[in-house]
Image (tube, rainbow over all chains, first blue to last red; front, top):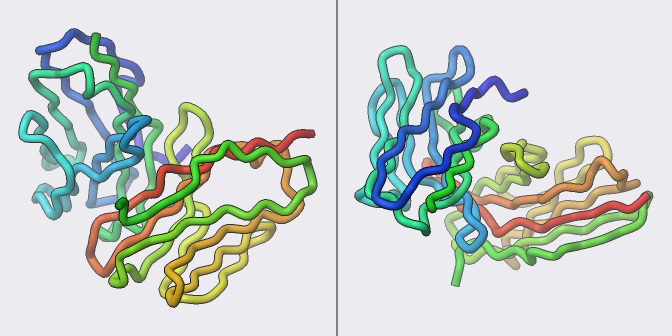
Amino acid sequence: DSGVTQTPKHLITATGQRVTLRCSPRSGDLSVYWYQQSLDQGLQFLIQYYNGEERAKGNILERFSAQQFPDLHSELNLSSLELGDSALYFCASSVNGRNTEAFFGQGTRLTVV
Amino acid sequence: QKEVEQDPGPLSVPEGAIVSLNCTYSNSAFQYFMWYRQYSRKGPELLMYTYSSGNKEDGRFTAQVDKSSKYISLFIRDSQPSDSATYLCASANQGGKLIFGQGTELSVKP
């Protein structure tokens, strides 16, 4: 167990809908990262927050947004969902903002039907 | 062309074999090289982390980086059925985002 908690574990929703994925980082970790893993694209970095502020952005669609709250938990919001958004979404956290030292959660499996 | 290329396999070996997993990368600025292990339906777990070129050993695992050929390798000695998983290589430059390979699915047969 990495100490990073993601909820829910599974989510099934219809196209056009909006969902929120939640991540609680390891105790003491200030930085949170979101990744998307799909069969065709592999594991791709979406966005990073450090102590509540956005630090880096990757291949995140405009329909997706994220935030990190004062208690350091983070949420990833996915809207106007399409079939192609079906994937595993991982959250990772690190204490110092170095992505090379991040620990991954177990992921949320999103299925869009 | 992807910045990090990895043969997806699958790779099947008998228990006790030496496993060689490889990646190539294209960005000369990459300085950090990682190997992750991912069991089915689980999150990636960091196995090995190397800065710049050279070898790093941890138990049965050895990571090698050859920056001149932009080649990253992971060797697993005395492979066990519990090593069956997908192995992901990843690279990054200073302060940059992690770029992952597609992952190689490894199966170690008893």
